[in-house]
Image (cartoon, rainbow, N blue to C red; front, side, top):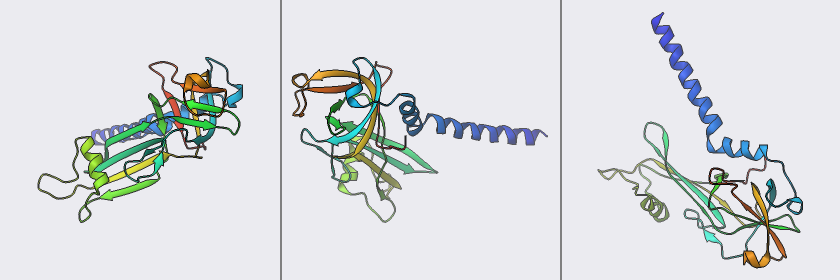
Length: 214
């Protein structure tokens, strides 16, 4: 009986871990937050209001280059995982610049400094036994104090995942809305007023996703 009890306690613990991960992982958190915020058209947003808006990305300054694929973008996310008795995340790098979206008539500028995003990782690469890491992969690892090989020179089993936000891609974002004049924004946006979406406070980020099935 004691062995059976230990077995069921262990099973419940594993189920609890799975449920915890399913509820609190990045994808679930961002989707849950976006679902709670009412959606609005850009033109209908009011100052100081927590809103959710959607639109297509427009480049208004020189885009960045994604570190693995070399694609032009305004925001990227890369994840590196190592297979050592199971896949474990060892690197997550995420950065963005001027993310401007439009609904066709009005424009919004998204503050990405404190954004929490769920992006669809659409590029996948690997390095492993018999397959060396590329230069871009090595550079990414080096930035984070990691290497692609073990102490005795054999390749680690690594996978590299990348997501980007590029021009004309549709995204959804939630945050606090404030209207600013074109002069306040200092970007070549063809509008007299621009909606600025930022984080409500230091404990609540901007939520951003390219998954429109939110």
